[in-house]
Length: 222
Picture 1: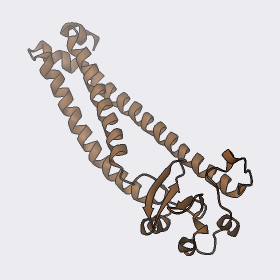
Picture 2 (picture 1 turned 135 degrees about the vertical axis):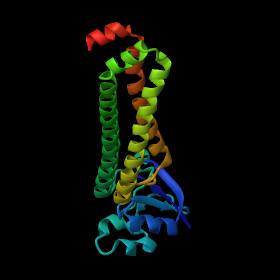
Picture 3 (picture 1 turned 90 degrees about the vertical axis):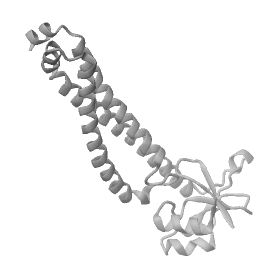
Picture 4 (picture 1 turned 180 degrees about the vertical axis):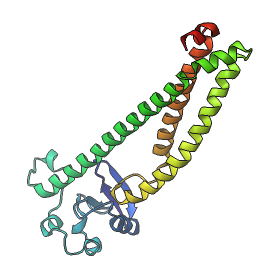
């Protein structure tokens, strides 16, 4: 038998087999108040209401939550006799998940801003070196390529170290995730792509500006 689950984000996930659902319960991805329905059911109800899953939650599952179903069409039909406790629990899960998305977005934005600031400042401080190299006959394009190559080395080292730490952290929060794998390729790819783009832009723009300056002017400014 398969089941459909309402995630903390309000979306429906499934069909999910009973074995997979038991695994989710053991990992803490769903709880006794998570709303679900079997393929033969017409309405959603808490997982604790299913005899095949009730034992997986132990004795702490609420009896009231286990016996009161939640109809997916109750509001449309005008039936307002809903289990308020289950609705509040589901709403708290939704807010908690959305807060995690906002917090992750803010953290990624701050990381990108900090990375850009550090790298661009480091390249800008080398304006005198860039001017001197050009004054001695180096091609501006080769100088910019040298700066980008050095930045790529730092970036690679940072990605290796950061990737290892991110993997370790994902194992710690795996039980708090629902609807997404701890090592979700799309999320990791988007975050890595953004940081790589920011890092290369932070190195390229100051180096390009410095290479366009008159070497003598840049050296006098230094």
